Length: 136
Image 1 (cartoon, rainbow, N blue to C red):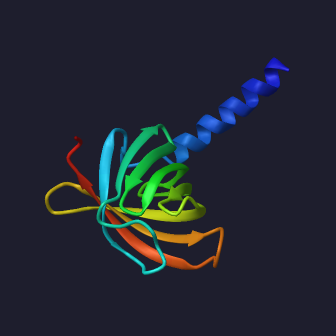
Image 2 (image 1 turned 45 degrees about the horizontal axis):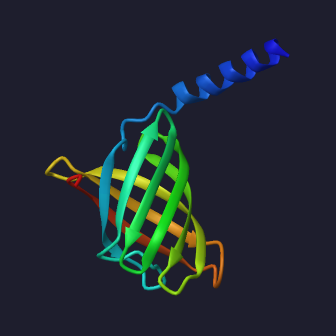
């Protein structure tokens, strides 16, 4: 059994090395710059990201969102994929998936360019942009 664990652990770390990212979102905050009409994230929504190796998670709230959570993984040197869920002001639980490409703005801040899809309700898709802000 110990040999199996070691094999799978080694396989996991080889994948980590292969997908070594050029970014670190740990302890960074973001706000919405723009979003599709069918999205619920807006100007008042703030995201707090964390990252350990290729695992990414975040919490978000504000605007139409009471509380939200994100979990995801790095998929390339400048991209990650997530699943998200939140409760909106109407008390409804909303879920979705998202592919995010990162870019760096002239001021050195990170911009998240998102292509997302609801996995509930109308299953609509959209694009949004989040920009890094100073932590409060």
